[in-house]
Image (cartoon, rainbow, N blue to C red; front, side, top):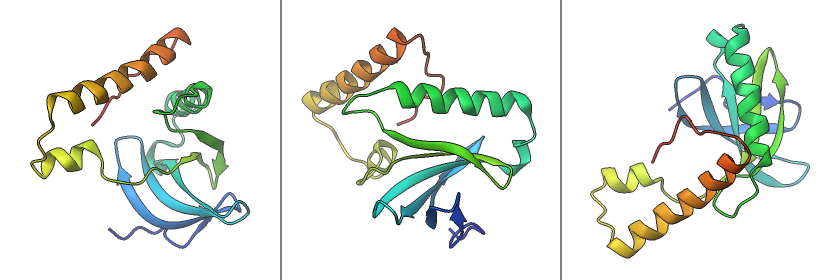
Length: 140
């Protein structure tokens, strides 16, 4: 999928390489952070809702909440900011296929793997809940 941000430099440090996905509030890009020589995921709030104070507040809350979660099964947040009037979150880029991709491909999981995946998910959610957070957008 081609996107106008591919090739752009977000916040003077994240060189956009490709679009990973899009949702209701934003797009997530694969980017390279040259200073630290690492690939990252950059979530950028859609331009169409960037002027909505309520959506901006929710995005800021998401960035702050995600940055407080320290767990091997949670994505690490590296930075948060604004670029050309759009809020962004830079975070750890994970490799591999998403659970949705595996399920769409007809992947069958043994019971033990299902229990392990759900247990890891519940562990991270328990940490979030202990911080007073409620995740409102769980996806595979």
